[in-house]
Amino acid sequence: MYPHAAAIGADLGRFAIRTAVVRYDGKVMLRESFPLSVKLTRHNIISSLQSSIWRTRELAAMKGINPLAVGLSVPGFIDHDRGIVLGPDHGIKGWKNVPLAQLLQSGTGFPVYAGNDANLMTVAEHRFGRAKGHRHVIFIALRTGIGGGIIIDGKLYRGVNNTGGEIGMMIISTGTGDDPMKGRGTLEEFASACAMVKRYLLACGEDLSGTARLRARTIFEKSAAGDPVAKMVVDENARYVGIGLANLVSIFAPEIIIIGGGMALASDRYINEIRRQTRINSLSWCAKGLKIEKATLGVDAAVTGAAWFALERLDGRHP
Image 1 (cartoon, rainbow, N blue to C red):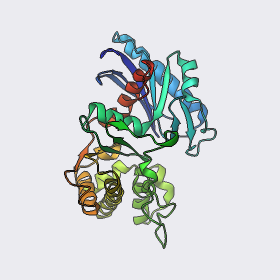
Image 2 (cartoon, helix red, strand yellow):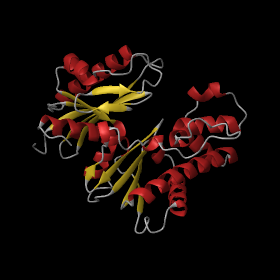
Image 3 (cartoon, rainbow, N blue to C red):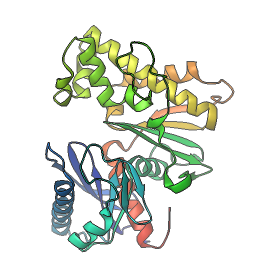
């Protein structure tokens, strides 16, 4: 594949679809963002993805760029060989066993490939970002949910049925007693952006119906402004992330941990607290020489990984 060959990367988020045209060498040629409907349905997700891809293609043509394929970054379990969204449905009717790549290929005329969002962010950071040159990497994506990826001996670990690396599903609490966050006790339930909002509303004695209106970004801003409740919630979130990462350090003994996703961009103080909590909870022998760094690709990670993945698949490789 030529370094200047380009593809469209599209990242399906909770509130928007981010697209970019990215070359095989990782250079982002243009970026766009398209808002999603508040009420998500299978139909409007597919329709929004299709129109976003078409608009991005038009913008690329205006710059004289001809993308060769489309890569989709999608949350959940993805059959990346066939481009099928297996689940979970995230409360969206019909969002299981969706042949997403096939549907969008028919709708756009592009070869389309789909992969798990956090896995694609992982390979992007490993190939073009802060983890470049490292062979043993843990990547965690702190977003609306929590995802991640694991690089072992220079290769993305996929596990059976391509479902490995679901860091957010790690159990970190038994959920017993009066803890209002109790559920299955997963890291995602305790430390995602949604969990942060829920914990803040509970700490303020407010109704959880406000969850949809409040963003984690606002809580970080309140913490930086000196709000003691927001500071407590941010620190508690960092503690749970650190505990989860410490478990992974003891199992995989990585060279480097990369912290990515929108929450990683919010506050250096937050990242430093995650570093501290990871180190004090890790087995010292496994953490020897460990680096814990913020991702460098930021919001470009998912679209860059998706575009690179599409070009690799188009060239007959299976990364």
